[in-house]
Length: 246
Figure (cartoon, rainbow, N blue to C red):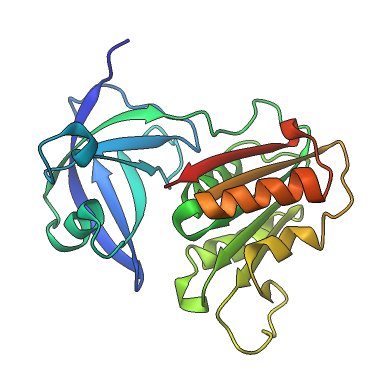
């Protein structure tokens, strides 16, 4: 089936951290139906080059699939990157964005019958935020869900207040932030000093059958996590799913 291309307007832009922007796109009333699953992504066609591979950039949807005409994207600034330079310096409210999608199979299982351990770094949290919003608005599962989010410093954390609110309302949800560039050990019980891998290595060192790891982030993080989980910790291949960024 040919891809459907959509034309949307940027209706809101916010700085989430010094290096990350939240961008909201609104589809016009007469646009074709845009239904997506939590965890999927869109591919933008940006005016930054002549060839398709120069222009196309994919970003996970950070908002919930609530049937509305608005979607939220969470985009990190990569110095020198054509796409992020465009999205950080040349757009404004009212800018027209062309994109296709949704695409991707990094989605929640139809039936959640395993504990879910979501491991991410940076803007890799976007698909997990969409998944958690979707579950919170629908049928929250009986299984445990643990989001382990690796970042550099406190100011780099995305959606922390939302995740802390979710821990207060959902007894079987846990949120852990691992910070790699802090000098002292934090007082908050939900923050750990170190890299994201320490967040799951300590708690889930003993493999059990009813546990599923979902990973999202840059290639180096994913490669390291997969090796640790499969080789170092003894989990099965079907217990680890991932989405690569770069």
